[in-house]
Image 1 (cartoon, rainbow, N blue to C red):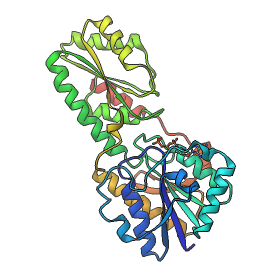
Image 2 (cartoon, protein in one colour; image 1 turned 180 degrees about the horizontal axis):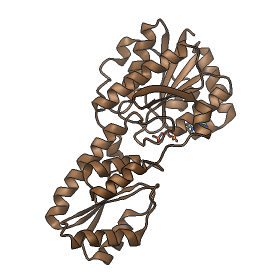
Image 3 (tube, rainbow, N blue to C red; image 1 turned 30 degrees about the vertical axis):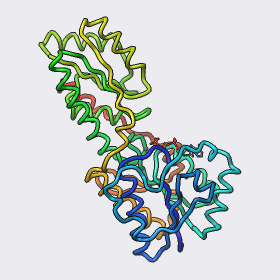
Image 4 (cartoon, rainbow, N blue to C red; image 1 turned 45 degrees about the vertical axis):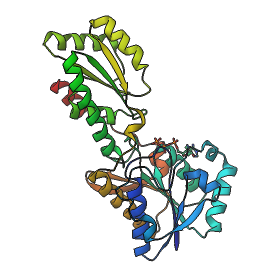
Length: 319
Ligand code: ATP
């Protein structure tokens, strides 16, 4: 291969820029040419493709978001749209594509791979919901953002003997909620993995009040329930003022932390290495500190993320 393309897709995540930089700089070092595809699969379809050099990725390692832009582009599910995308790639002489994104973006990469176009997936999402990797790029930075918010809520909740619900991102994966809740010392964790048991929640809160706890912070993953309605329910059942805070998109922004910058740089470099070895249709992960790669089709169809029962048990003991 002589020329590769790189795009970022789906929800943005801190560290995506560092990953693009890793791909670009290592590819150039290895004598490859690199093109940036702007606005994810949408830009691929619209032929929004430009060459990138070393300077194109200067001053981005410390920046949140993605300078290439990202987009939700459901049209990419249509085969004609993907055919046009491949045509555009060939028009630019691009032999292979690196896709940085979450599981949705992997679906697009899987479909291109099935159509005979080699893609490598790099897990870039704050949700940590991608199979075949312990950590995704952006997850650790987002966790620090959530912890900061929980710390602030704790201050004001303690002062007012208030119950706080904090809604955390993660879509259908509870990792971000779970680990942030442990680090933030939350009283109760509700994730897609645990489900929501309202009776158990109330008796847990009441046990805390009986122990003399001044506050209760409940961490819950998004999309599980209406948190404002849950707050009203808790207030009615416990007699304690209860407020819900939805952290929302602030979790996606901000400078990537050291972990994400290093992870992104390593994964970007590894993607280029794999392409040079003639690999395609792979997705990259880090497992037990080692970079690994899996068949992207197998990863999407068969691999599942392990549920961190050890951490749920730990959280239970720490309350
Ligand atoms: P995050 O989870 O952080 O939001 P994501 O990559 O999972 O990131 P999605 O919006 O699910 O975000 O997917 C990103 C893009 O990938 C979609 O907008 C679409 O262009 C493409 N995509 C998703 N699913 C498919 C599919 N089944 N076939 C083809 N392309 C897809």
